[in-house]
Image (cartoon, rainbow, N blue to C red; front, side):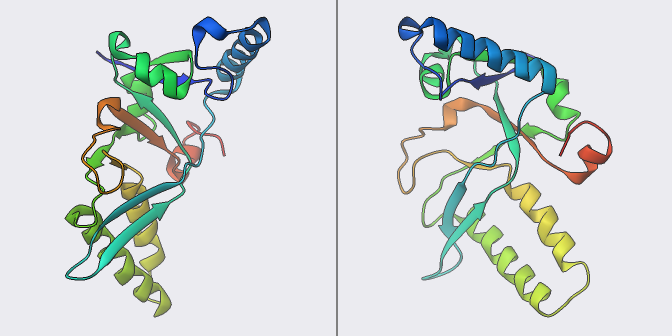
Length: 186
């Protein structure tokens, strides 16, 4: 499919059978707001764990404005709907791509995960460069954080339950370039 879906309404109601008229009105208001003002970017608390060498656990946290979409087929949507809400807004994949969005890279989120560990090593080194007043180190760290915003845990920490892998997630992450281009509003 060339379509991506955005799910919303977790705070309204996730069970269609239990919807009240007030809840339906709130869903309609939510849809009206999206159609009038666009998608709100939220700042989720993301945490990844990994391994940065013998005896060196690594952790990366980022709080970056983003909007998440899924390639999930509607026929497999029941668990997703129960987690994220009943309202679905569908966009063409190009809508997300034109705003520097793309699919996430799932990582294992284990304390021996090398991808997260290697990235944590790079962040530590960049922080040292920033402390030493090395030119452009902040720019490089900012660029690396943008890359990190496309990493997502595939499982709960130190398990292989693959709780999030079936989301087929795509993200649109805030960038100054997209704001300047008029595709995102601060």
